[in-house]
Length: 202
Image (cartoon, rainbow, N blue to C red; front, side):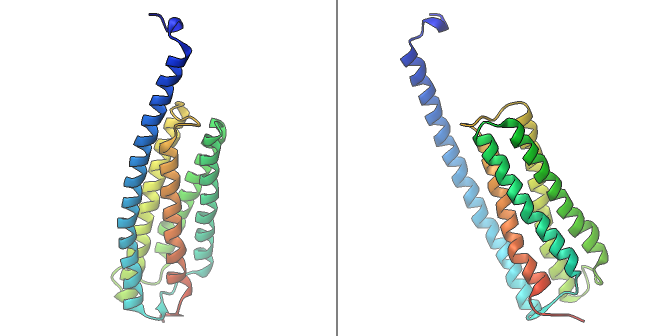
């Protein structure tokens, strides 16, 4: 039987069945992602506990202006990541691609600011007492997650250029957005713990 001869209700039923299968698959993937976040949250939580256990009400001597800049950059990146997800949900592939590129650029800017600048300007090294161990471990672990997020976004961007996402099926974009927001949320806790809370260690 030719495709033209297939009854309309049969094609609609097949499409609905396929959409249902996709929704179940996406729900499973969503659960797995959130379980990953729960386990990862324990790692970041342990780093925060370690920071206050070792340094108490003291903090490393860091450049306040740089900390504020990189934090602002990362928070703004979340806005564009949200815009990317909204655009693909509305079927706007161009808007999705543009906002994804901006998010990646801001993520790389954050990495350059923390790893390329702050690590070089810090008046201590990784082996310099507790402050060195705490600062480089916390920022290093977070930077690794940001780098992973940028790679994740690059993959999503390339697949988006091939037209592999639609308004109805874009789990990859949703997963990337959730991951990116999670990484940003972690920095919301790390930033005050490293830059704002306590007196500076002389």
